[in-house]
Amino acid sequence: MEEILSNAEIDALLDLFQNEGMPEELEEADDLDFSGAEIQGAYKVAELDLLKPNRFTRSELQVLTRIQEMVARKMGAAIAERLRLEASCDCVGVEQLRFSNWISLLDHPTGTYILQMDPLRFPSVLTVSPELLYGAVDRILGGTGEAHACPQDLSEAEYEVADALVQPLLGHIQEGLGEMVEVHPKVIGRYTNPSLAQVLPAQEVVLALHFQVSGNPLFGDIRLAIPYAALEPHLGGLESSRFLSEGRKDGVYRSVLTETISGIPMDLKVILGEMELNLRDILALKKGDVLTLTTKPGDLLEIPVQGKTKFRGVLGTRGRRYATKILQVVD
Image (cartoon, rainbow, N blue to C red; front, side):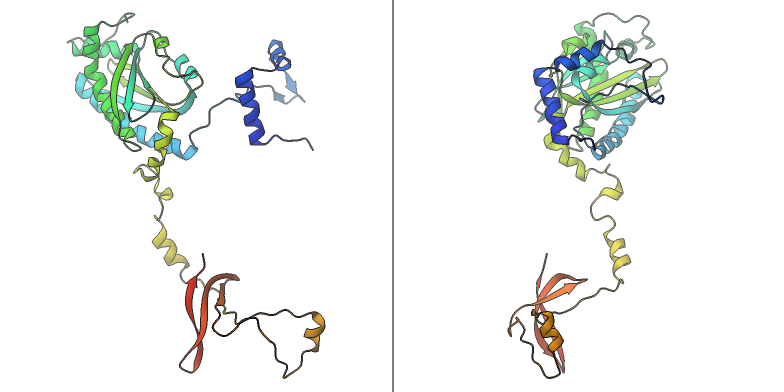
């Protein structure tokens, strides 16, 4: 049987490749052409990203997705109200990416905002696609909102106008993150060239949120990258989030479960004592023989339920019958 690497060994290899580079024998494989290659005529070679981040659990991403769906609806309403036109916003992606991969998804130019969200330790990056940002500026200044041509940069005055749209969006983002931790977003930098927003290491894992705004005539994307290292200390807050599915909240089915299983018969015994005998002595037992138990008067007696000790107690009487008083509950 072929040896299979453990998770620890795989992690060690990945760390080696990241810190010391790819071994020469593997680098040479880059020159090979695997296009169209087949194995046993059925399986084709495909690329596999061994460095794909895996920091957030599936359940955490599910809860975060529900939260951002709520945020998207509120952002859509805010955009429609602020720009006085029909618009909607949908959450189309909640995933974990390397920061370098996230940056590569952005167009140039793109409205890029560096955010400090205390108490998060590291900055986040918010982007608004140019068609949406310039269209919003045009609409706020009295135009139709159509962005026929996107300039390479915005003036300071135009940024001030765009803030009339961005600030309400930050408020709803703040509300969504409030399910984990109360944050206070503050814009500390603005660019139209996303390559200038290299505020995080390229290999940093980020929570990538992708919202899409659609309306007449507005259409565009809003993206937010929040470092995992900044969120990690606060992820426990998701356990009490109102967006956690009812089936995962502790105690939700306690009453139903108790009612369902309360009538199931259980085997409970009181062990008065024990002793060991070899087979020869057992075969020699006859009427009148006395067996000496290890338990002394006053000792705690074992009380197993379904064969496992659950209680300990002492022997006594109630009326004309023997009884046992429970003194301990065994965890």
